[in-house]
Image (cartoon, rainbow, N blue to C red):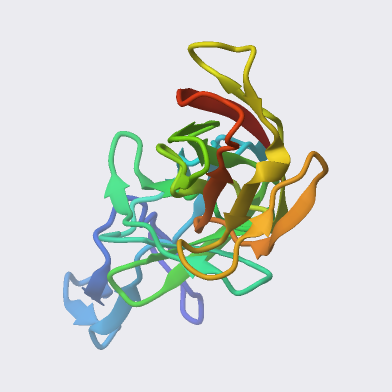
Length: 273
Protein backbone atom coordinates (compact mmCIF):
# COMPACT_ATOMS: atom_id res chain seq x y z
CA UNK A 1 0.00 0.00 0.00
CA UNK A 2 3.00 2.28 0.18
CA UNK A 3 3.30 5.06 2.76
CA UNK A 4 -0.02 5.86 4.45
CA UNK A 5 -0.97 9.19 5.88
CA UNK A 6 -2.67 9.41 9.25
CA UNK A 7 -6.33 8.27 9.11
CA UNK A 8 -5.91 6.43 5.82
CA UNK A 9 -6.55 2.72 5.21
CA UNK A 10 -5.02 0.02 3.04
CA UNK A 11 -7.03 -2.60 1.18
CA UNK A 12 -5.47 -5.65 -0.47
CA UNK A 13 -6.75 -8.95 -1.80
CA UNK A 14 -5.42 -12.22 -3.18
CA UNK A 15 -6.56 -15.17 -5.25
CA UNK A 16 -7.25 -18.53 -3.58
CA UNK A 17 -7.60 -20.56 -6.79
CA UNK A 18 -5.65 -23.77 -6.38
CA UNK A 19 -5.36 -23.34 -2.61
CA UNK A 20 -5.93 -26.54 -0.67
CA UNK A 21 -9.12 -26.25 1.42
CA UNK A 22 -8.53 -25.82 5.15
CA UNK A 23 -7.88 -23.33 7.95
CA UNK A 24 -5.32 -20.54 7.40
CA UNK A 25 -3.81 -17.85 9.62
CA UNK A 26 -3.59 -14.37 8.11
CA UNK A 27 -1.13 -11.93 9.56
CA UNK A 28 -0.95 -8.24 8.60
CA UNK A 29 2.07 -6.22 9.65
CA UNK A 30 3.02 -2.57 9.18
CA UNK A 31 6.32 -0.79 9.47
CA UNK A 32 6.64 2.81 10.57
CA UNK A 33 9.09 5.23 9.11
CA UNK A 34 11.55 4.40 11.83
CA UNK A 35 11.60 0.73 10.79
CA UNK A 36 9.54 -0.64 13.69
CA UNK A 37 7.21 -3.57 12.79
CA UNK A 38 3.68 -3.90 14.22
CA UNK A 39 1.11 -6.79 13.99
CA UNK A 40 -2.24 -5.15 13.30
CA UNK A 41 -4.25 -8.26 12.35
CA UNK A 42 -4.29 -10.15 15.64
CA UNK A 43 -3.53 -13.28 13.53
CA UNK A 44 -6.98 -13.66 12.08
CA UNK A 45 -8.08 -17.13 10.83
CA UNK A 46 -9.86 -17.77 7.54
CA UNK A 47 -11.48 -21.00 6.36
CA UNK A 48 -11.25 -22.05 2.73
CA UNK A 49 -13.96 -24.57 1.89
CA UNK A 50 -13.82 -27.06 -0.97
CA UNK A 51 -15.42 -25.80 -4.18
CA UNK A 52 -19.10 -26.53 -4.63
CA UNK A 53 -19.85 -29.92 -6.15
CA UNK A 54 -20.95 -29.39 -9.76
CA UNK A 55 -22.73 -32.02 -11.84
CA UNK A 56 -22.67 -30.75 -15.37
CA UNK A 57 -24.40 -33.51 -17.37
CA UNK A 58 -26.32 -36.77 -17.19
CA UNK A 59 -26.44 -39.27 -20.04
CA UNK A 60 -28.52 -42.45 -20.18
CA UNK A 61 -27.78 -45.09 -22.81
CA UNK A 62 -29.73 -46.27 -24.70
CA UNK A 63 -31.41 -42.86 -24.70
CA UNK A 64 -35.05 -41.91 -25.09
CA UNK A 65 -37.27 -44.91 -25.83
CA UNK A 66 -35.80 -48.29 -24.86
CA UNK A 67 -37.10 -51.46 -26.51
CA UNK A 68 -37.32 -54.55 -24.27
CA UNK A 69 -35.84 -57.82 -25.53
CA UNK A 70 -37.93 -61.00 -25.53
CA UNK A 71 -37.04 -63.10 -22.48
CA UNK A 72 -33.76 -61.24 -22.07
CA UNK A 73 -32.39 -58.10 -20.45
CA UNK A 74 -31.27 -54.86 -22.09
CA UNK A 75 -27.84 -53.49 -21.13
CA UNK A 76 -28.06 -49.84 -20.03
CA UNK A 77 -25.89 -47.31 -18.22
CA UNK A 78 -25.91 -43.78 -16.83
CA UNK A 79 -22.98 -41.33 -16.75
CA UNK A 80 -22.89 -38.09 -14.75
CA UNK A 81 -20.11 -35.62 -15.53
CA UNK A 82 -18.36 -33.91 -12.60
CA UNK A 83 -16.48 -30.71 -13.46
CA UNK A 84 -14.65 -29.63 -10.27
CA UNK A 85 -11.94 -30.83 -7.93
CA UNK A 86 -14.10 -31.75 -4.92
CA UNK A 87 -13.06 -34.81 -2.93
CA UNK A 88 -15.54 -37.32 -4.34
CA UNK A 89 -15.33 -40.95 -3.32
CA UNK A 90 -18.65 -42.49 -4.33
CA UNK A 91 -22.03 -41.99 -5.96
CA UNK A 92 -25.37 -43.76 -5.76
CA UNK A 93 -27.96 -44.42 -8.45
CA UNK A 94 -31.66 -45.11 -7.90
CA UNK A 95 -33.99 -46.19 -10.72
CA UNK A 96 -37.74 -46.09 -10.13
CA UNK A 97 -41.16 -45.62 -11.71
CA UNK A 98 -44.63 -44.54 -10.68
CA UNK A 99 -45.64 -48.04 -9.54
CA UNK A 100 -42.97 -48.05 -6.81
CA UNK A 101 -40.69 -50.49 -8.58
CA UNK A 102 -37.22 -49.47 -7.37
CA UNK A 103 -33.74 -50.88 -7.85
CA UNK A 104 -30.22 -49.56 -7.31
CA UNK A 105 -27.38 -50.73 -9.57
CA UNK A 106 -23.74 -50.67 -8.47
CA UNK A 107 -21.97 -47.41 -9.30
CA UNK A 108 -18.46 -45.97 -9.14
CA UNK A 109 -16.42 -42.82 -9.64
CA UNK A 110 -14.23 -42.90 -12.75
CA UNK A 111 -11.46 -40.48 -13.74
CA UNK A 112 -10.22 -38.87 -16.95
CA UNK A 113 -12.72 -37.29 -17.07
CA UNK A 114 -14.17 -37.57 -13.59
CA UNK A 115 -17.66 -39.00 -13.66
CA UNK A 116 -20.15 -41.22 -11.89
CA UNK A 117 -20.89 -44.36 -13.89
CA UNK A 118 -23.46 -47.10 -13.31
CA UNK A 119 -24.33 -49.96 -15.68
CA UNK A 120 -27.34 -52.23 -15.24
CA UNK A 121 -29.41 -54.85 -17.01
CA UNK A 122 -32.98 -53.66 -17.55
CA UNK A 123 -35.13 -56.74 -16.95
CA UNK A 124 -37.46 -57.55 -19.83
CA UNK A 125 -40.43 -57.91 -17.45
CA UNK A 126 -40.15 -54.43 -15.93
CA UNK A 127 -43.26 -52.27 -16.33
CA UNK A 128 -43.62 -50.26 -19.51
CA UNK A 129 -43.67 -46.49 -19.13
CA UNK A 130 -41.47 -43.70 -17.76
CA UNK A 131 -38.50 -44.70 -15.58
CA UNK A 132 -36.57 -42.11 -13.56
CA UNK A 133 -32.83 -42.27 -12.92
CA UNK A 134 -31.68 -40.30 -9.84
CA UNK A 135 -27.95 -39.89 -9.18
CA UNK A 136 -26.62 -38.64 -5.83
CA UNK A 137 -22.96 -37.60 -5.51
CA UNK A 138 -21.67 -36.82 -1.97
CA UNK A 139 -18.39 -35.05 -1.14
CA UNK A 140 -15.94 -35.70 1.64
CA UNK A 141 -17.18 -32.69 3.65
CA UNK A 142 -20.74 -34.05 3.78
CA UNK A 143 -22.37 -31.99 1.07
CA UNK A 144 -24.05 -33.67 -1.87
CA UNK A 145 -25.74 -32.90 -5.15
CA UNK A 146 -28.39 -34.78 -7.08
CA UNK A 147 -29.22 -34.87 -10.77
CA UNK A 148 -31.88 -36.87 -12.58
CA UNK A 149 -33.17 -37.85 -15.98
CA UNK A 150 -35.58 -40.43 -17.39
CA UNK A 151 -36.24 -42.86 -20.20
CA UNK A 152 -39.29 -44.62 -21.62
CA UNK A 153 -39.43 -48.40 -21.46
CA UNK A 154 -41.63 -49.66 -24.26
CA UNK A 155 -44.27 -52.37 -23.93
CA UNK A 156 -43.58 -55.88 -25.19
CA UNK A 157 -46.21 -58.58 -25.65
CA UNK A 158 -44.44 -61.89 -26.24
CA UNK A 159 -44.52 -65.57 -25.38
CA UNK A 160 -42.28 -68.61 -25.69
CA UNK A 161 -44.19 -71.82 -26.48
CA UNK A 162 -42.60 -75.27 -26.17
CA UNK A 163 -43.38 -77.39 -28.16
CA UNK A 164 -45.34 -75.84 -31.04
CA UNK A 165 -46.25 -79.17 -32.66
CA UNK A 166 -48.38 -81.72 -30.73
CA UNK A 167 -47.65 -85.44 -31.21
CA UNK A 168 -49.64 -88.58 -30.25
CA UNK A 169 -48.82 -92.26 -30.52
CA UNK A 170 -51.12 -95.13 -29.53
CA UNK A 171 -53.39 -97.98 -30.52
CA UNK A 172 -56.96 -97.61 -31.81
CA UNK A 173 -59.54 -97.36 -29.03
CA UNK A 174 -57.09 -95.80 -26.55
CA UNK A 175 -57.09 -92.38 -24.90
CA UNK A 176 -53.45 -91.36 -24.73
CA UNK A 177 -51.37 -88.48 -23.47
CA UNK A 178 -49.38 -86.38 -25.89
CA UNK A 179 -45.92 -87.84 -26.33
CA UNK A 180 -44.24 -84.42 -26.38
CA UNK A 181 -46.74 -81.93 -24.90
CA UNK A 182 -47.64 -83.26 -21.50
CA UNK A 183 -47.31 -80.45 -20.77
CA UNK A 184 -46.83 -77.70 -23.34
CA UNK A 185 -45.32 -74.65 -21.61
CA UNK A 186 -46.26 -71.03 -22.38
CA UNK A 187 -43.99 -68.41 -20.85
CA UNK A 188 -44.88 -64.73 -20.72
CA UNK A 189 -41.58 -63.42 -22.13
CA UNK A 190 -42.55 -59.74 -22.28
CA UNK A 191 -43.78 -57.08 -19.85
CA UNK A 192 -47.53 -57.08 -20.52
CA UNK A 193 -50.26 -58.98 -18.69
CA UNK A 194 -52.46 -60.89 -21.11
CA UNK A 195 -55.01 -63.69 -21.48
CA UNK A 196 -54.08 -66.92 -23.23
CA UNK A 197 -56.45 -68.62 -25.68
CA UNK A 198 -56.04 -71.83 -27.68
CA UNK A 199 -57.50 -73.61 -30.70
CA UNK A 200 -56.53 -76.80 -32.50
CA UNK A 201 -56.44 -78.54 -35.87
CA UNK A 202 -56.91 -82.15 -36.92
CA UNK A 203 -54.04 -84.57 -36.24
CA UNK A 204 -52.43 -85.98 -39.39
CA UNK A 205 -50.70 -89.35 -39.61
CA UNK A 206 -46.96 -88.99 -40.05
CA UNK A 207 -46.53 -92.29 -41.90
CA UNK A 208 -49.80 -92.18 -43.82
CA UNK A 209 -51.28 -88.68 -44.04
CA UNK A 210 -54.58 -90.02 -45.44
CA UNK A 211 -55.57 -90.86 -41.87
CA UNK A 212 -56.53 -88.11 -39.46
CA UNK A 213 -57.81 -87.68 -35.92
CA UNK A 214 -60.31 -84.86 -35.59
CA UNK A 215 -59.42 -82.15 -33.11
CA UNK A 216 -62.69 -82.82 -31.31
CA UNK A 217 -61.18 -86.11 -30.11
CA UNK A 218 -58.63 -84.08 -28.11
CA UNK A 219 -58.98 -82.64 -24.63
CA UNK A 220 -56.87 -80.17 -22.66
CA UNK A 221 -56.34 -79.16 -19.04
CA UNK A 222 -54.14 -76.83 -16.99
CA UNK A 223 -52.90 -79.77 -14.91
CA UNK A 224 -52.13 -83.43 -15.57
CA UNK A 225 -55.06 -84.59 -13.44
CA UNK A 226 -58.66 -83.55 -13.09
CA UNK A 227 -61.32 -82.87 -15.70
CA UNK A 228 -60.09 -82.26 -19.26
CA UNK A 229 -62.07 -79.99 -21.61
CA UNK A 230 -62.58 -80.47 -25.36
CA UNK A 231 -60.13 -78.81 -27.76
CA UNK A 232 -61.95 -77.14 -30.67
CA UNK A 233 -61.32 -75.36 -33.95
CA UNK A 234 -62.29 -72.04 -32.32
CA UNK A 235 -60.31 -70.01 -29.81
CA UNK A 236 -61.22 -70.65 -26.20
CA UNK A 237 -59.78 -68.96 -23.12
CA UNK A 238 -57.17 -71.04 -21.37
CA UNK A 239 -55.72 -68.57 -18.83
CA UNK A 240 -56.78 -65.13 -17.61
CA UNK A 241 -54.07 -62.63 -16.62
CA UNK A 242 -50.82 -64.37 -17.40
CA UNK A 243 -48.16 -62.22 -15.72
CA UNK A 244 -44.64 -61.52 -17.04
CA UNK A 245 -41.95 -64.11 -16.15
CA UNK A 246 -44.50 -66.80 -15.28
CA UNK A 247 -44.87 -70.10 -17.14
CA UNK A 248 -48.30 -71.60 -17.79
CA UNK A 249 -48.93 -75.23 -18.73
CA UNK A 250 -51.46 -77.05 -20.88
CA UNK A 251 -51.78 -80.86 -21.00
CA UNK A 252 -53.09 -82.71 -24.07
CA UNK A 253 -54.92 -86.02 -24.40
CA UNK A 254 -56.66 -87.59 -27.40
CA UNK A 255 -58.85 -90.57 -28.19
CA UNK A 256 -57.65 -92.68 -31.13
CA UNK A 257 -60.67 -94.04 -33.05
CA UNK A 258 -60.98 -97.74 -33.90
CA UNK A 259 -61.23 -96.93 -37.59
CA UNK A 260 -57.67 -95.64 -38.06
CA UNK A 261 -54.31 -97.44 -37.90
CA UNK A 262 -51.73 -97.13 -35.15
CA UNK A 263 -49.04 -94.58 -36.09
CA UNK A 264 -47.66 -91.23 -34.99
CA UNK A 265 -50.06 -88.31 -35.41
CA UNK A 266 -49.22 -84.62 -35.17
CA UNK A 267 -50.92 -81.23 -35.39
CA UNK A 268 -50.29 -77.54 -34.84
CA UNK A 269 -52.19 -75.65 -32.20
CA UNK A 270 -52.70 -71.90 -32.16
CA UNK A 271 -51.88 -70.01 -28.98
CA UNK A 272 -53.29 -66.47 -28.93
CA UNK A 273 -52.19 -63.83 -26.43
